[in-house]
Amino acid sequence: MAVTRLPEIFRTSTFRLVGISGGVFVVGILVLFAFIYWETAGHETRQIDLFVEGQISAIEEGDAEALVRLLAMPGVSQERRIAYAAIFDPAGKLVAGNLRAFPPGLQTDGRAHEINFVPSGVGRSMYTARAAAARLPDGGTVVVARDMEELTQLQGIVWRALELGVVPAIVLAFVAGSFLSWRALRRVRLIQRAAERILQGNLSERLPRRGTGDDFDRLAAAVNRMLDEIAHLIDEIKGVGDDIAHDLRTPLTRVRTRLERGSESSRSQQELKNIVGAAIDGLDQTLGIVTALLRITEIEDGRRRAAFRQVDLSAIVRDVAELYGPVAEQGGIALAVANPGARYAHGDPDLLLEAIANVVDNAVKFAPPNSTVHLSVVDKSGTLVVRVADRGPGIPPEERESVLKRFYRTDKSRHLPGNGLGLGLVAAIVKLHNFRVAISEAAPGCIFEMICEATPPKAGFVGTLK
Picture 1 (cartoon, rainbow, N blue to C red):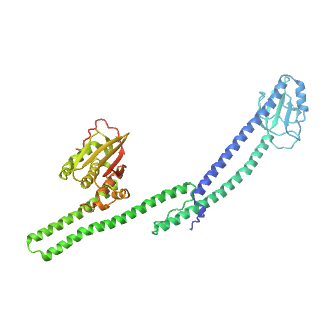
Picture 2 (spheres, rainbow, N blue to C red; picture 1 turned 45 degrees about the horizontal axis):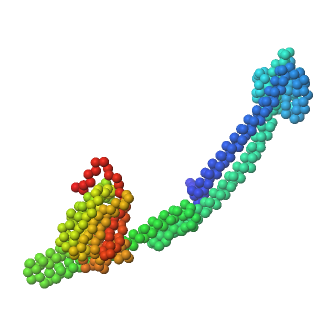
Picture 3 (tube, helix red, strand yellow; picture 1 turned 120 degrees about the vertical axis):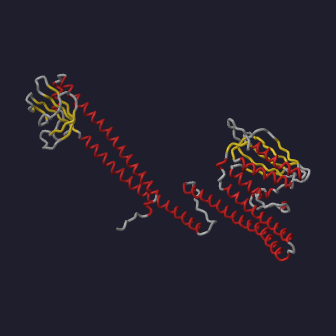
């Protein structure tokens, strides 16, 4: 059996939302009208009760003239059916008035009660009224009643108002829901078409925006930012792939050339060993590049956050100075460390040690002989700055962002050994920790800063990396 599906415009979330809102609105109208009717009916009922109880009270006080006026009043008529009054003898026989019989079940307590009765001389229709009854001195009974015709009319007015108010409201909600759903469906289809073009490979395509700042615009803006980041990452991957191919091709070509020459021209076993040793060094260089890339990928994946804890950056800086002090001395370079005391941050101590060590290694590598590399931790009102300053050739302003990318090497560094991955590893570690990097001019030289938020020391914290 085939299932008939509603048109797409009626299956949108906007139409459902408008339908729900319209339903809530209709329920609210019903509750409002019910409250109005309840309050008005209560007020009218109280007014009728006051009328009939007032008449009974006057009669009970012995005001015979009031009884005569009551029976003679114009309202007591068969045609208008506005008010009813009757006197019954002790035997219950009608003496005067427009009630055929004493209403069954009506208490003679002088209070108003609801009754059903048949008036005298107006057919056999049953009417509802508010009535009060009292005993007369001669043993008879007097009844005063007023019908509920006003309330019946009021009920009719309320129902007509509901018909005139709710039905147009439902129609308006349906029309508004259809219109809003149509507009939303148009936006969705535009976004869907743009998404299909992106899936087909057009990464320059972006989701359309109207500039209204609505939910669709905010969603489109977020997706467009994500697409920008994806396009940027893809460009980086392409660039990194080219760099990897270039950097691996060179040492592998050297290895192949050496081995080929060695197999053809080596005259002794020692000469062949030397060629094989040089080939092994080239392979080690290649493996070093691969290892560094894998480590950067591991850090960028965020798999090292489990080791995060409170660390003392000053202690890490001292450890780096102990590690690179002898290396700097061999090149005639002094390594000066400013020790401000314990300064705490949140991170992975091993990764932070590796990042600072790479920066110091670069500074020592580029610093001229008989110069000093300054290493310090500066506290700036709750912000910690790990600063490394050298007196080397420096980094031009236009290259300071690029040096943090993989395989990038400035023209001033191409004569030095390295693969351009040291500062790329530093950038990955800084990003993992949500720290910031700043590179500035030292005139001469370069100042590299790693900036992070300070954390208060925990009780019992020792501050060692061992």
